[in-house]
Length: 489
Image (cartoon, rainbow, N blue to C red; front, side, top):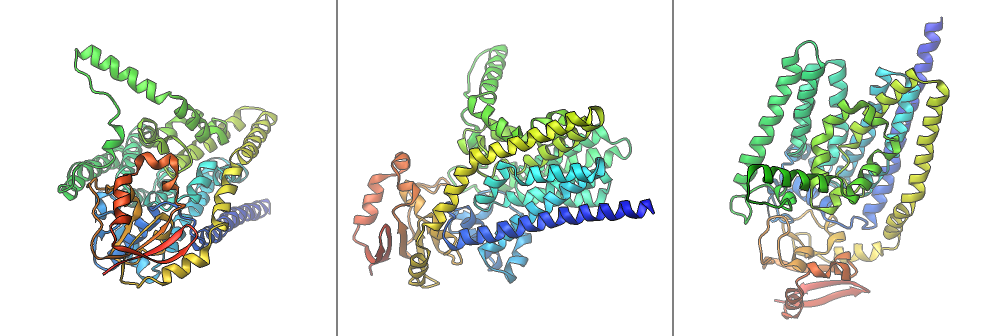
């Protein structure tokens, strides 16, 4: 009889956890649908991803927003698997749906992982901390990136690893590697983890994923991407350019090694990186450090961010931490379980209380940024933007500022005005940027952030003046800062 009651209670906790994850999914889907409808996607990542999948559904791997084959940007092979689903639901919100499904589904898998090691109450606490982690909230607010789909896959990978379902683990690892070139490094780390922790079938759990991950990474980075990018100014992956700030010196072996070690540590422990690490681990009170073997699984992605020269990768404000936080959450949950088993229950409750305080602090600290994000959508004249887009024929070539792109990208000849501003194709490196002659319309909001003084240093002002003073463009409609141009003749 006791066993029946215990199972019933467990079932209630499972339903509660699943209900929370379902509620989180629908809350964010409604909020982000509102964001899309009010032109709140202010960058071009959603538009690029959506156009890539739309092009694949129409038999082409060329993306006009990228300016080349879509794999010249990143090795997002997963787009081929998404295309059949997208064919039946051809809308940018389909990608947002998949992003949220990965996040909400992954949150429930996290609950099951911690439940397997400890109990449901602790699992629920860790799941809630993960769902409300500031890095995740910023990731959800931000654009769509194929890398977002890795969140749920990483949780599944760890789950199958722990319950020793080898076939499911290998299939999941393969899908993870299809998402982006750097995801194969996580599979490599699982291979090393398997060699160290598995007592049986070490070859299958360790050597096999290690071999698959290394092979996939080398073939993608050294063969496939350079082959696709060979006609471009830079044939190597765009990732390598993020680490060109490490100075090259010539001298003795000892001098060279000493210099690089000093340079490495000065970058790793910069003020910006220390703040970034605090923001990553803070909601879990650094509990995750007690389960460092789990954290090692995400070490390549963490170092990728810490050593990059791109400032966006040193903050939680974008998507770059989305694949690190799942492993931090797992490690923190396992560590909390150990602490509860070894310390007095009062100590454990105090730690949980402190985690709650940090959550409240994060809401207080980051809350105004999230409010400003939402306020930016509400204040945009969506109906006017809808009307202007309706004036553009569906087959016409268009160049547009960022927030219009995801509403125009179901066409083969859409271009970003960002490249016109900088007079260079940002992704392929081709310069000067030449707008194709088949572009008949330009839809531009001159309040776009890239027109702000803080970004003027990146704008080729002479090229911009030539673009508008060439006499080929006439104003069709104007509403405040938003102008619809049409090419003359």
